[in-house]
Image (cartoon, one colour):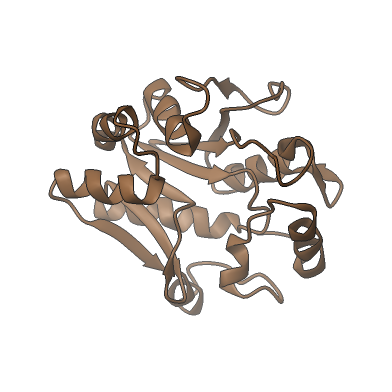
Length: 212
């Protein structure tokens, strides 16, 4: 596939109280879970914005400039890659199934979409996201202007290109057999962000033995 997977690892971890990338979930660091999700979708995976040494897990792309938030990591990773599509997953979504990431990639390629997002229920999620490389110049302009919100940036740059944001309805993909249903976890639960210890406990409570 002409696509690369990137784990976003540039958060401050302030609510977690320790380096989030290395916090263990079911016996492994969160960063290892994120990499496995991307690799399970058939993607070569790297890490962007790491605040600690994570090279033992995967290649690490440095931020263009520290402190620019997730959009800075997105731009840095896209600039370092020759792949047509870049697939971004935050390291704090351990319940995300690889099958959904793979489906988002396949739909992006099928539709030749510049932005592909998932919708669970009535809510369109910011991540995971599949971005086509023609988005990079516009995203850089947004970043340099100091407007760091990812979702708004994806929308505005796609609009500049006069191209739609492609949204995949997760429940329809599950009912159509295109995405595997995780036992006991509704689709909205796949997007749980593990930002603090209570979130980690919630994920431990609802996580099935195996994420597919």
